[in-house]
Image (cartoon, rainbow, N blue to C red; front, side):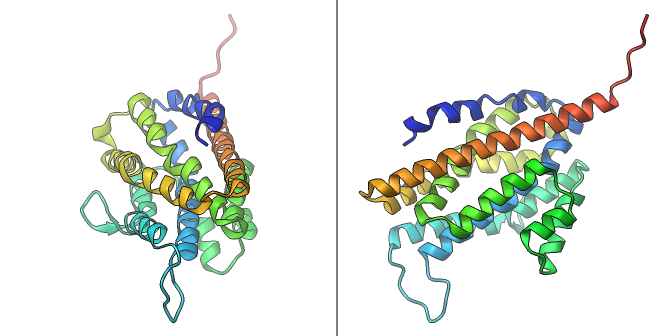
Length: 260
């Protein structure tokens, strides 16, 4: 399947966004949007946990114990990892701590979360937070897959849109962002933690989960391939939107040239 996704994967891996984050202001712009992807990632994770393990009462043995063990291991770290200070925290909390560290604006995301917690539906919460259209498109697509997709489609989105892509993306960001790591220790810790976990453990685990769900069914493999391609293209469009937002912010603060 990975060979069939090579073209869109390479487009994502070589996205111009990575070379464009060279200042703290640009990093702040990036984080203010990327936090939505950190959040909806957990919806995909929890959908897989709901499908592959027993989270209802009375308890019964999971049908696919192999996949159940793998997804539980992923949830353990994503939902209750140790943060920069050695305290239990979800990766979303760690990301918000990193945003606070560099004074990135989290108001849009926090307004969105507050609306959800008051019982607003997804569309109303996105509207209340005045989220950019490209963010709404990204979040809608992932939540729809989590709610309505088949298990193999959710697993393909989870693997190719997240776990398989993240180590390469974050490695590029760290190597090219031009920001002194000592100035952003929490953000650096978050990125390196994901590179290590996703590259060494969660990525391979997600691959095994996907293959166990597909089995020998070619129809399931076709559905998974389509979901994977859509997930990668969705990430590319999110990166396009963030890049445009960074460039617009830069142009609006750039001194106007004086004609001579």
